[in-house]
Length: 432
Length: 128
Image 1: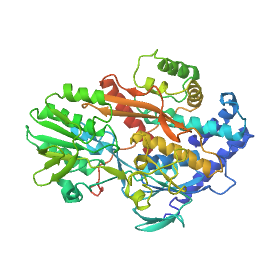
Image 2: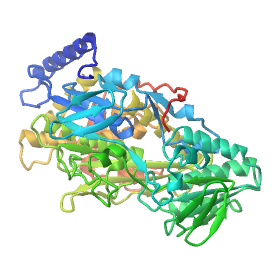
Image 3: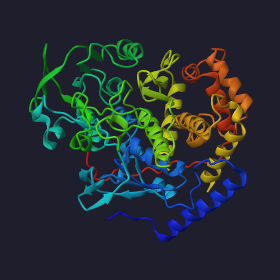
Image 4: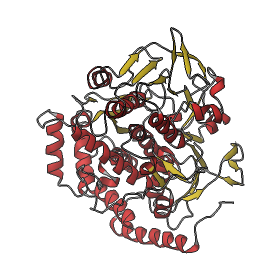
């Protein structure tokens, strides 16, 4: 199945585009730019596993930058894209999950991406075939973009749907986010919300602290006698430390109680009691953010070679260190890079450009440079940022943060407006 | 079709403005690398400034922006001469050559109106 999901008319449109583009280019160019290839068969097929920020961006940009000459297939089990960025605002009450939910039809139609709603069962890397629950598809190159998986090894009693209905992680935006919001709404004034933060690295470094601010903002307005207790396995706030510290101690003084070096040991589900290395605390609403690792498909394929959690890659092409014919992008990648949506899209574009180059017999960019901007909301209007340029270091073979990056001087409503503009632009870029 | 034409405008203009390319070797590969390098860097601006610099939010549209204006503003951010928002953290991390290349790239992008994707009701069947 899924060998050709494009209709004849769509294929004709693409063929016409390529021919027109070729004529246009040939009139102006004498050099071999290596892009117009109407006289040759398509450059091959890329299959992408995962339709999150990374996978969807890679698909769109491979189609754009190959001028439609690379057949691109995305395999994604969900029919909807739910944005993790802004999903903490659902907990604060200023957004609903439906404000952050989108379909894939625009991006797949606009760019001629073949979209397969299915789950991957296994990948035969020798035969270059992906087996799904309802069919098989072959590939020339494979991109694995499965996001994160959660790890409940330490608290195995939470590793089932029933337990997570009582104690959600809400670390993949969706119904768990809605569930957690409902629990906060149902909690009486004077209650205690306990949030546990795993040791870094995890998806979205500032995310837990933004979540603290969102819940505290809701409590301050609607349940002012309530408390937020943060049990952080890390020795300190892992991102935007000074700004979050100011929010915890001033904006939300008397509400937020931040306790570093306090790693979760066990959870008693019926009483919502958390035991850490130092203390025991009973919650009215409990949110355990578990430790994380590369998504399930990456694990199945044995690509998570770093601490058995994350995937080592070549940062010029995102080729896996385990199998150079397989590329890994997004939160599954092991890197000194923040696991952010913007970073996932930046990795996806470097990978997309490399894919076009490799499949044309050309050299990928030897010195990629890209930017990352990450906003966090302190309340329903004010935001803070961290922004950096990252540059490939050929000696160390990693992406290094360039000089000059940094964080906001203070939270502001202006930055809140920028943060919404960021969301609208990245959604438009990824999903249309 | 617009996308195709844009890509070829870019390809040709970068070939024609080869003086921007560091003149170590004048091979096609280097020109392609430079083109790919700038395109990857410019594309990472899309999160705030839209696909190929056409913003759907309050952030400025960079597509079709005058090269000189782009360079002046970015250098002002880089040197701390323009009151900081977020951009100084990016401008300071870029080289002057990269700022020049980005100015050429964005000046050549046509202004188009991008659409925002439509929001939907989250389906009950959504897995998590």
